[in-house]
Length: 52
Image 1 (cartoon, rainbow, N blue to C red):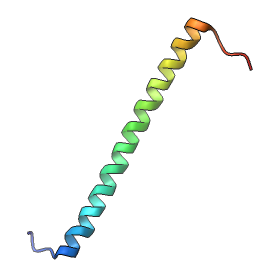
Image 2 (image 1 turned 180 degrees about the vertical axis):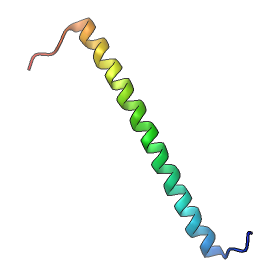
Image 3 (image 1 turned 45 degrees about the vertical axis):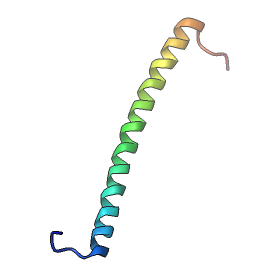
């Protein structure tokens, strides 16, 4: 397999999985921030600004 030993495949595979996880975490964070802002605007429109 591309001239790599088993331990090298595991090592580079682990790096690839970690990179993929980091990318998905950034995408998830962006989606959650966006939906949170939209939800906050909708709630403020329907119920007014919260008292502090």
